[in-house]
Image 1 (cartoon, rainbow, N blue to C red):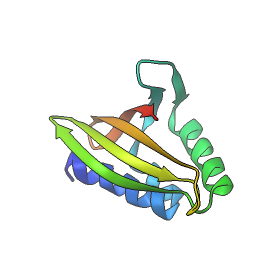
Image 2 (cartoon, rainbow, N blue to C red; image 1 turned 60 degrees about the vertical axis):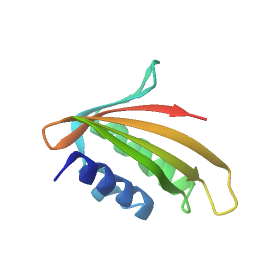
Image 3 (tube, rainbow, N blue to C red; image 1 turned 30 degrees about the horizontal axis):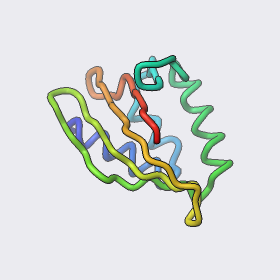
Length: 111
């Protein structure tokens, strides 16, 4: 599976709110951080817990892929996110780095 395919697989599972399929895309020691900022989550258990809460709180949450850039082993996704069909809406840049066949780190920029 290519890096872009893995990024798409986790996005598809995120949009389906399939927590198991989503989490399988990530390394056990996944790191999530704000771009150029602090680490907000570390480890798959913390990641899984945060997304389980988010899926429960926003059952209509969806992320639309606006653009994807692949540069070597890095994938950058520009996404438009809606918590429900009525909003609120926001945009993110998700920068994925990989270890083997898993996503090892995500850095988010949000507008």
